Amino acid sequence: MNRFYLLLSILFFFISSISFSQEIRIKIYNAPGKAVIFQLEGEKTSEIDSVIGVNNNFNFSLSNEHTGFYRLQFDNRHWIDFINDGKDIEIKTDYNNILDSLKVIKSGSNKIYYEFIKLNKDYKTKTELLQLILARYPKEDDYYQTTKEKLIRVREDYLYFINVTSQANPNSFIARYVRSAQLPVVGTDIPFDEQITYLKTHALDNVDFYDDELIYSDLFTNKTIEYISYYSNPQLPKELLEKEFMTAVDSILNKAKVNGIVYQHIVEYLIDGFKNYGFDEIIDHIVDNYVIKDDLCLDSKLESSIERRIDQARYFKIGNTVPDIIINDTTGKQIELNKIKADRILILFYASWCPHCQEIVPKISELYNKQKENKTEVFAVSVDTNKTDWINFIKTNKLDWINVSDLQGWYGKAAKEYYLYATPTMFLIDNNMKIIGIPKTIEELKKIIL
Image 1 (spheres, helix red, strand yellow):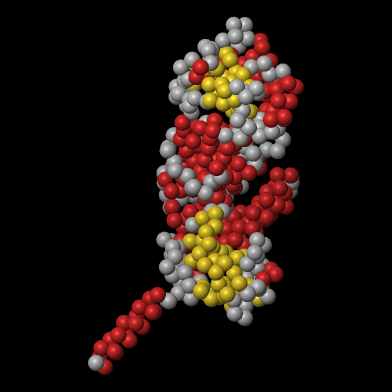
Image 2 (cartoon, rainbow, N blue to C red; image 1 turned 135 degrees about the vertical axis):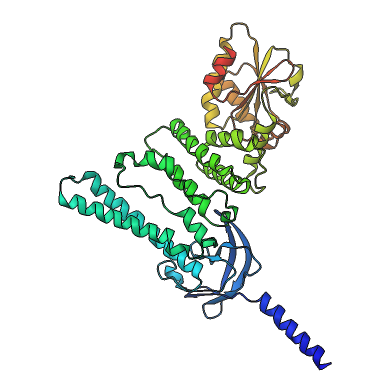
């Protein structure tokens, strides 16, 4: 019996030592008593657990979680990021100055990570200043050569850290992260005014798009926004700037296609980011040329407007048959789309409160009235919810075509069935209800109906 209890005790000790082998100890002076632990995936965060601090000590384990970046967060302004690789971690810092006062006591990966963060900042500052001097200083002056030699040493020191210091264990998460996350190094032989062109061609050379474990970090999102910044030009009008960004998007996504997980990760980030800045043309470009073509199943957490955009692009293509619309006109009379007698019908979704509609709808009306043979009828579906606003808009702009609305806004039957996500939206159909055109602008519409 004693032998049984002895064996049981040994087994219990063995299991306990495995289950609780990792210790993460983060001491944050002056911190609140509670924090939340998040897993990071680019800019997305997923809550893992919460932890109560005792005397500014936050002790926990993540031994059952995957390798990658995690965050101990107190509020929207105070948090600490760290790499979990299954090994013990000990970090100390101050709540009021987390990054500058941070010290990694234990964890080789986190020591390298925070040294890399500081080195990147210093390298970027120094090289930008030194390059500025070289771009403007007379080459025949001794100081020019001194500055150039200093720039070369700064680059050499940076690359030594990237290729040697951080690579003691080249297969580790942190080593792979550093290799891919390194800033692009531009040689001194490349003139200052040609460096952007060089970066557009070579800035992604060191990024390992095959390594899908790196999605559990900020690597791919940081590299994406860094690369897109090379195409940014605030002096360009929005239309031209969107075209520049599309070129950047194509470069990134064509490289990312080597790994489906990384590819989807970056697609979702791009859609979410450009949505926030109102670059609808770029989102359409991504949806049409990548999401639809490669049949990507994106994160269900994307907003409904993005989901509708994707579904509309997927199901409303040239040659497809559109759903019938049965809806009331301004007098309350029921109108049925498939019973309208016309060679072609322009289905126009709009709203009286939409600024772009206020600009484009009168221009469509002008085109409609200019038709020589009246072959195209307009079936204008308003997504207004206020009947007075809708009627006033029709009267003000003298819209002498078929005006209909269920006054249910985005929740109306037609809006849902057509996956409406923006106004104005237009579909040109033939008398068999098949799509023959999807004009986006007034110029595209002119080519179709005049």
